[in-house]
Image (tube, rainbow, N blue to C red; front, side):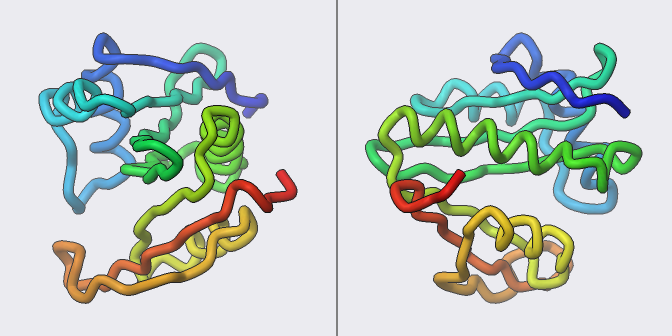
Length: 153
């Protein structure tokens, strides 16, 4: 796999994003194209898409409000995992958000997903709360936050 191309996309990519989400989260909560379009209609919501040789392999969706933002979802297809796609998507999103004046970035991650927790910790995220039984499988969500003002990215 080559270095993925990262680009900003919009509503017209909703079907592609829904397919990626379904592949990345098979067995979990899957977002439809309509749900993704509705999110993209929300002010401050943006998507960065990663492609390898023109084939979409993942995306990150963020929502910004003033000086705070939230990662709504980060989806990478299984065939592209452990190849730094998620890292590159997050770096691009963090850089873009910091450039827009975002001071703090939040996300939720399953307490049963140590790989994702490690990725987020390496990018400076720290646990600031827990949402009990948040996911459909009964897993807790760890609420993580990163201070983009003090980041060394």
